[in-house]
Structures are given as C-alpha cells and as structure tokens.
Amino acid sequence: MNKTAHPIKKTEKEYETFILDNIDVISENCKWGDIKNIERQYRIPLKGKGHIIADIMIWHLDGSGTCIEIKTGKNNRNDDLTAIGQLLFYGLITEHSLVNMPRLVLATTEIKPELWDVSKRFGLPINFLEVTDNKCIYLSNGTR
Image (cartoon, rainbow, N blue to C red; front, top):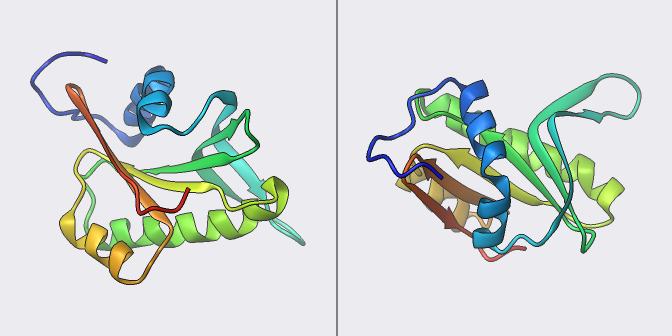
C-alpha cells in the first residue's frame, strides 16, 4: 500500500479500485484466506426477478466468501445504516449459494464508533475495514 500520510479522499469507485489493488495484502492481514475469485459490482440474483449489487464479492479457496460494501466516509449516518442493512441482506441471499454465511465487511475510510457499538450490541455479523493510504484496520466481530 502507499506509504503517504494523507487519508484517502476518493470517490466510492476510486476507493473500490484502491481496495481491489491491495486486496491480497488486505485479505492476508485480515486472515480471510486465500482468494479463489473476485468480482467487482457483483450482481446477486433475487428469486423471481431483479438483483442486488455488492461492491466486492470474494470467494476463498476454503469455500468461504467475503462480501464488501464500501462507504467513503463522506456520507451521512443514514448512508452508513443503509450499508449495514445492505450487508445483512447480501448475507442472507449469498448464504444459499455459498452454503454458509459470507463474511460481511463494511469498508470505510473511518470506522465510526457508534456503528461498531450498534454491531456489537445487537450481535450483527458485520465486520469493519478501515483503509487509508497509510493504514488498514480490521475489526472483526468474532463471526468468521
């Protein structure tokens, strides 16, 4: 990763690219396991009709998966709360195809303590990944 002292100030798409460019290092340091396949803007089909789109979907060699929703930190609280809802829905839908619940990760430029508190208090299976140009912090809630 870059070793500059400045936080990322990018659009969500640029932040997504930055994470994908560093995904092997991130996955190794977060102990997610070896990567089999990665898809950007992964379309998850819904029963009946339509689909939802996960920012990044990773399949690991051990059969597990990681679903990443990206927020740049420029958004308001409602956007953050929406991201948690999105991840929970992605988990429900992809659990059937993976045969287990994927690791659900909210990637952001800043982990907001109140979101971490909500996740811990209610036992949500949401993990948090803070990535800036010079650091990567992963807070796992203990699930996967």
